[in-house]
Length: 63
Image 1 (cartoon, rainbow, N blue to C red):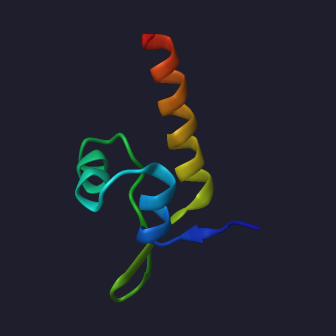
Image 2: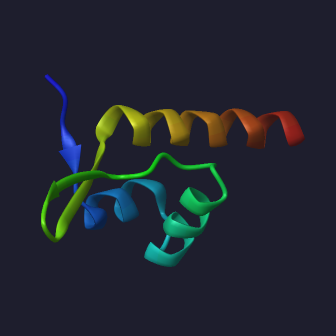
C-alpha cells in the first residue's frame, strides 16, 4: 500500500520550506506532486523517502 503525504508532512519529514520544495521540483531534484483533486496535491511517501536517502548519501560523501 502506498501512502500519500500532503505538504505539511513533506515539510516536516524533509525539514524544507514550501518554497524550497518547489524550487527543487523546478530544478528536477525533487519529484513533482500528484494531483489529488482540483486544489489538492500530495507526494508518494516512497518518493520523499528516496529524496531523504539520497541527501544523506550525498552529505556523507562530501564529508
